[in-house]
Amino acid sequence: MSKLLVTGGAGYIGSHSVLELQSAGYEIVVLDNLSNSREAAIQALNALAGGGIEFVRGDLLDPTVLADLFNHHSFDAVLHFAGLKAVGESVAHPLMYYSNNVTGTLNLLHAMSRAHVKTLVFSSSATVYGEAESVPLGEDTALQPTNPYGRSKQIIEQILTDLSVSDRDWKISILRYFNPVGAHSSGEIGEDPTGIPNNLVPYIAQVAVGRLPFLRIFGNDYETADGTGVRDYIHVVDLAQGHLAALRYLTQHSGCFIHNLGSGHGHSVREVLAAFEKACGKRLPVEVFPRRPGDIGMSYADPAKANRELKWQTQRTLEDMCRDAWHWQTRHPNGFK
Image (cartoon, rainbow, N blue to C red; front, top):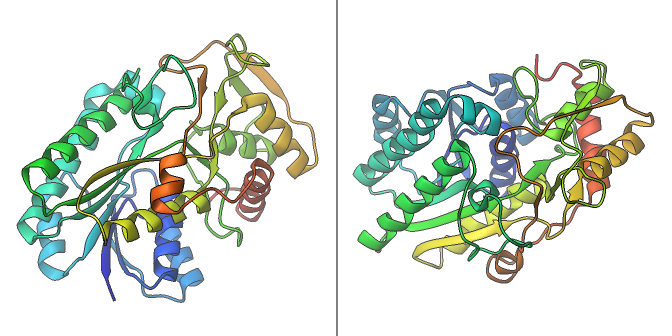
């Protein structure tokens, strides 16, 4: 049985990926500092998986934590989800984002090198594309991120590319994914942001369950069909299965590989709201605010390369995403608390 280190494995995308990996037969150790997640997610994972998922609370900015982990475990690969991820927060606190995301990744790579663990799946983001001139976005689209969060991901991608050139033993998968939403069908794990949600669907869900008074739509003057921003939404379980596909791809290929994980089409804020209102069975109050700094009008993927090389594609619809997100929120109206 292969043993994997999953950084950020208590978080939203990480936890769903842990469950898919464990179901596929991998032994999992999760490292998470719980800055934007809760240990209850690990408890829920172990309940769903029948136990066996080990949790270590620690920070990538602490090299001693990593040294201890690699000294006590023989990992076959690492899946790296840990990182700060809010666009607006990154604009307000760029140094925090560069320190946490870039320095944390460098610490992880140094620890992996010392332990001769050279297989890595990295959680990147479509934000590296920025305000592209045309859509859909392919992997060869020019990178021009518009905020420090996206630039931190771009810097890490360049580090990983340089590393693979310097040492051909490295097997690296960079996954640029678009907008994950939804939850596990059990309703026992889902997106549980601390504070006010930065992402659309958890914000809508908290309005629907009564935790927030109304949905804030940031910008209704974009050059889109209804004036609201368009994004490529992907069910978090589809995304998790993409990480499993990438890991399997690396068993047969050395080098550094970049793949988009998205559905290949976009939905506007208004369309997502309508789908969620259908899922929860009621109209939700809305107020329109100015655009947020760093936001863009339209973004959706060209996932053909991942379809072809990873043998992966999305299976779930926007309606599935909203239904599962609402199921999670109704079972856990206050999140994991």
